[in-house]
Image (cartoon, rainbow over all chains, first blue to last red; front, side, top):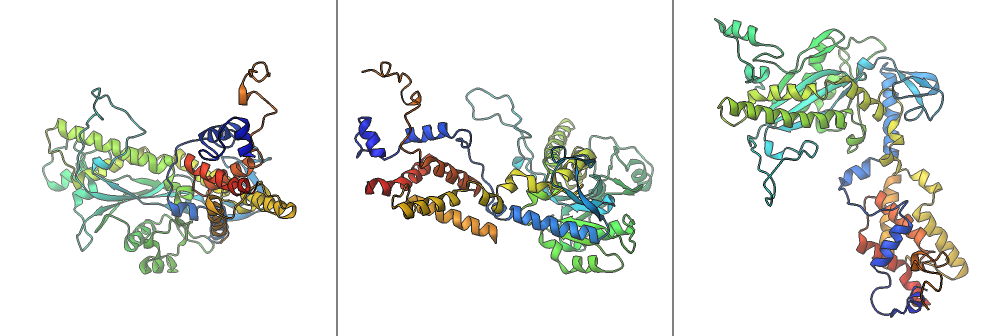
Length: 442
Length: 63
């Protein structure tokens, strides 16, 4: 038929390809409501494999059930619709996410942790929202000075079900085998603040320690009226280990942030990093003297479910770190100081970024609602990226495979095939789609 | 006879009765393209045309 059409249009049907660029353009025009030409954004293969509707559904089932068993949540007599502010509403249109079957009774016992790796090296920093600078015409880009001192550190914020920060833990990279770090690393030194002179070292430290002072210390959180100072520790590579994570839980327990009762345990939600499976950590959380209920979310799906990965939290924090480093570099230049970062600069940098990200309760609250953690609304099951992987829903729609099956059945019955999928690119595509569907069903 | 005289001034775009010979295949092609996008393997122009040709090629030879 296509060849006939070419003959009608006075083209040589045997010259060139059967379909060309013109068909591609007209196909896009005819199906412009569904398909458009656009740039591809690369996505980690594991994210596609794990961030599926089925996996999210299982995660919600298991975690909600555990939250209820730990006493943090309570099963409602009847599932209800809730809006973004956690208020009961009458219809699905006014609600956010799916129906809520479990209500969170103790959001301050619902803890989420997520580490974020940082480096003082400014060369690897992003562009802070695509910020542009003026440059000379004809040059490739305007050169900007950057300090390239490599110092890895990790910030591990713990937030609760109210969106409020519970603890800020900072992990330095240090080979010190006893795990001890210098006191000025812990307090940090804010070079933009002048130190108050004192007669003795003790007096100097006392007078100059605190928020906004020469030795500022890391971010302090307030939980149920208890001040929780920043927890500072070190590891050989500046990353989290099972031992450090255990120490952080112990630190919170020693401050009595979560008094246990017979039917109430603190509930911790984390990602599947190896440190969560180390024996020391498992022994600590299962010890009846300080038991924790710990759940792991879908691996490689943290971009979807993890509160700390929200753009308003992690994104804002990373931008804050970049800006703080730039400000500190300028401050060093103004004071004719050496243009390199020191370990004592890390805490002031973290302080600035923390205030604009994890310390913001409104940001935390929004991230919780959008991920289905308070209220427990299974919000991700309505997320487009997750819904696209829903196998059951597609079976009812005009799914490509079901259309092909139907066409093949009609062709077999009439003996007049419209398309062929037995060889060539079409056969490859069908194989690919079948494999993808099987993977999603596993 | 010009296209204006035939009442088809806009050519291919303007004639409502003129349909692409691919009209039976295009819904399937569109569904396949969407399915491939969702599975993380979007097609570029060359691959799209390769797929479209592959879908109809054997049928063309039979005819």
